[in-house]
Length: 176
Image (cartoon, rainbow, N blue to C red; front, top):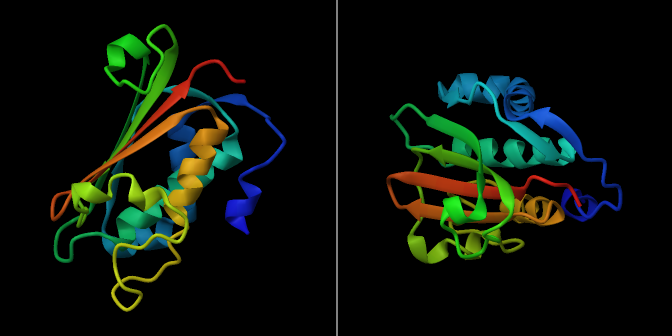
């Protein structure tokens, strides 16, 4: 149901600070973050032009995944950064060189995943672990991808098993 709702026809873009979005999500996940003794590091300031409730869902899903796939016995650290740059500065072939982007990087030190799954993890109902190992439906990252697509952006995952996962999100600065 959440996945189907991400294809909203309403395009209520607004300027909001990345820190505000992440702090709202942290508040919703306060108990889980506390139980995991996790630390979420967020930038002081980085303005986004997004559909706010959708980007709250993006960070809810990413942080929830980090909590779920953390390394037992190792404090979970989630680092979120944001910056503005042109496509040519960001050195990514999927981006238009003459377009300005907001680049958000979400990284954790969890269990990670093998690099061969970098694209596959965004597929609907895709799971890399059995249901007995980790709870979930395999929809969370598909929702992340769909929301980034709604914003005409690009999301790229990079994993290293036993080291952690990184998600790079590139959003054009002009809403369309």
